[in-house]
Image (cartoon, rainbow, N blue to C red; front, side):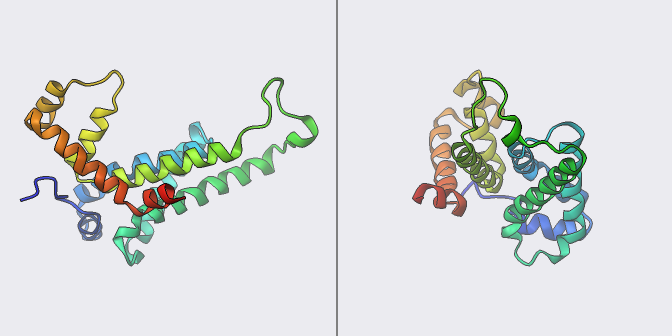
Length: 191
């Protein structure tokens, strides 16, 4: 028996949320909020603008959850919806306070931003968050504990997850294998 199997795959969470199960809806929000926030950060929205986008994305999901044909495509739907909402907010801001950096130039010493490298880093981060969201809870928690700063000891990880120290490495290997197999991550690895 694979103890790392996902007790709540996205299809089950979506079905239960559609049936009015608040715990399933909360699990969807908890699982995909880091993904939403990464897209918002990539668009450099902050404060009330960022909060508005996050709230609007979840509202759009409530409105459209029944129309999502393939629950496995939910992360992509969330990314697209978040991106569209960010662009809507940005367009609205431009109407209010136009600024043309081409005429004014970049702030002293700032130079032109490395758009390509920033975009590539954001795409990688987004793909990893999508893959992480699809992992079973125990594997997702393990990977997050392994990248904490300051580092968490294996003894502490064992205690928090209730697994033997000797299971940490194999569980990490299975989790990383699933992350590498995720379609968006594969696309970046093969690019």
